[in-house]
Image (cartoon, rainbow, N blue to C red; front, side):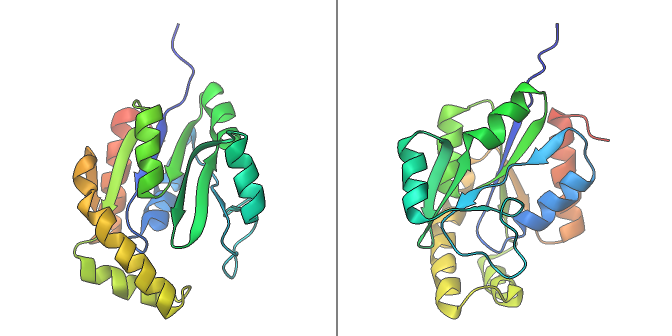
Length: 190
């Protein structure tokens, strides 16, 4: 009898590399693949909706959920906490639905340790300088937050060799097709 459990796809890379755009294109072309909504302690950005974009939690509530072991992974990033709630993933996997986790490097490492069967994918920029222009162009972060994200990106880029799958997002359409092709090797998409 075939195994009904879904697969976990971990997608990571530095802030501003285009993970969200690539994942959106992937999800548009797939059935049986869903994005896990992460939890965070940061404030919502303009247009973000609680429960759709993130589960926005206070620092105290986040800490309580960590203590209760409600996270598959959690990490500090740019002065805030982020994490993947078990409830976002477990029920989907049991129902045979595969899940995409868009997470930070620390979380990707935790998932690698706890779920070695997860497919790990690193999205890289064509060059580090392109991250600055993407982050500035996004218009969602202060200059201080952008500098903090760029400093973190140096460490993240140095870790890309840890990942068996690396996609360089030089051209969005090409990178999206590479991501779809990679996922299709693990999971048939419509």
